[in-house]
Length: 330
Image 1 (cartoon, rainbow, N blue to C red):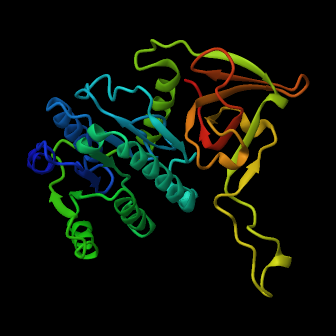
Image 2 (image 1 turned 90 degrees about the horizontal axis):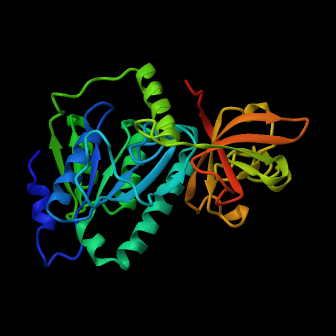
Image 3 (image 1 turned 30 degrees about the vertical axis):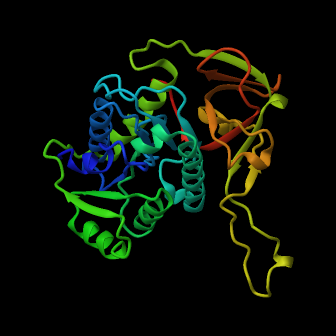
């Protein structure tokens, strides 16, 4: 991949809005690798592009189950990975959007709106643009989510890896948007296909890395809290309205963004929970998260819960979000 696409848009002091490059394609086509290459090339030229990761299946910025964004100021080290200062993270809680597609769309929109506000006040970041990594789900609903991301982030360049059909479909649907270029690239010859077991192992490794560091150089802390100190919610489920409020014959549908309080029980054991910055429950969906904790023990007699956190002390927020992430420390 040549740097021409990037240079054409960004290497000009007169350019106000930098390129917004979204990388799409099937699973194991080299999307994450290409995104890192683009970011590193831009950083080497003195720009500070924003990396947006929408792939909740693996997680390049933080743990799986999240969409996130972070500025890139230096070329990405192939071993150390993406340097993080204060990434902007939203917690979907699952490793596939199919569990709650509407919530995924809401979070993508929230992230995009926050970045737009940041760019409005930061000319340097706005001029540097962004690189957006996506998931490998490109059929049916996955394709609709790709279009949603392209539209929501106002992408100007769509790089399609190793999929002639997808490229043709995107060119057709985006033909009336002259400011969007769709470019087909060959799948990298060095890409290796990964099976489900390998992906699960990689997700487990990402969670362990969050708590213990890439080289086991971090020391997470085991903390104890009373049941009453924790306010745990999950998002999605339950009817939007009671049957009495619906038209005759209509069935109540699940509300994908409904907050449901979680009673502490054995099902929480080994769960990875997100710590929300929300000040009130109704702010949970629109708020990014401060970090994550891992439930290691639950004592129902003393009504205390033990959890692992990246640091000691009280949590930065009292509202926790449960998804379906379970981790068993090897």
